[in-house]
Amino acid sequence: MKRFALAFLALFTASALFAQADLQVLAVVKLNKNESITVKQLKTRVEAYQKQRNGTLSVDDRKKVLDAMIQEKLVIQAAAMAGITIPDSTVEQYFLQSVSQSIGKNVTEQEFEQLVKAQTNMSLDEYMKQQSGMSVADYKTYLKNQLIAQQYILSQRQKELQSVSPTDEEIRAFYELNKTSFVWTDMFKMFLVIVPKGTDAEAARIKANSLYDNLKNKKITVNQITVDSKKENSGFQAGDVLVNKSQMSAQQLGISYGDLLELFKNEKGYISDVVEQETNFQFFTIVKKYEAKMLSLSDVVQPETTVTVYDYIKQSLGQQKQMEYLTNAAGEIAASLDTEANVERKKKGADLDKLLNW
Image 1 (cartoon, rainbow, N blue to C red):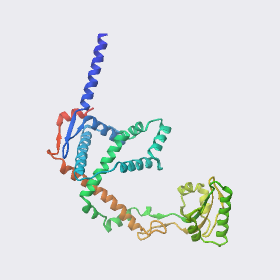
Image 2: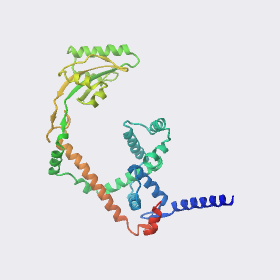
Image 3: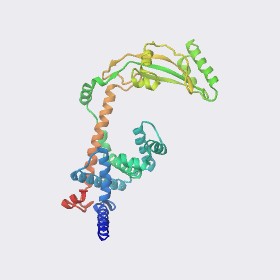
Image 4: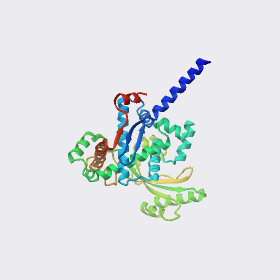
């Protein structure tokens, strides 16, 4: 019994020591207020990175994470001094964009939570911790800080950023290296007419057949149908759809790839039959066809648009170069703020290594 009591005491003492170690302050950032970074806070961030990388960070890597957290707080405090804030509504918007991209459709937080529960039987917090190492609240705080930091860096380097753009030589070199990516597949532009059934399927059928007959007998034009569809209570929708000869286009149209290939055999002016779907009646006509071809720098990226391949590459490379510039600028600005007057590192050398070797 005595041995059990001693073992329990040892276990309790070890737990208390671990908890005490987690509360130890590693650094204090004091640009405009005192903010501590504890071992526990560093552990949370390290765990998040380890989740993303699917591996364990070394002590040296953990030091780099600590330095990044120090610099992050420095930039956030500098942003506060500059009067830069990000409303919670913006954070929520970016959070929803992030989760929506992860599942391929737009959802609310409640819808995402229900989806997670149905598929994993986890709460949203549990799922976020599993995926990112952070709770929902921690992730949103992290996201908010990132947005504030970006806004501050932009405010400090706006003029320089505007001058960052690719040269003509870089644009042409990128094109030559990626020339085979700039192609048109065989395409056609269809004009699609959809008549929703609503509460009266028979009335919808009559309207769809009337529009079809009038178009086929040339009593009405595609342009006139477009104008009429935009009128209040028109009872139908109509518009252009660009169709590529691809598996993805077949899936989007809800047909097999073989059926899509059959559609491509039709010429300009072809009008389909009226087809009944679960919720509507629809038909289409082919208004234009485009043959597959390699694109030159002066060709437009998509038919009937104005953005050329040259413009597209310039914009893409420009965004890439601006991101690189902002990343470097963030490091430069944070390093300039990381002084002894602004940061007090409580643990250094062997003492720091010991604390980071958990």
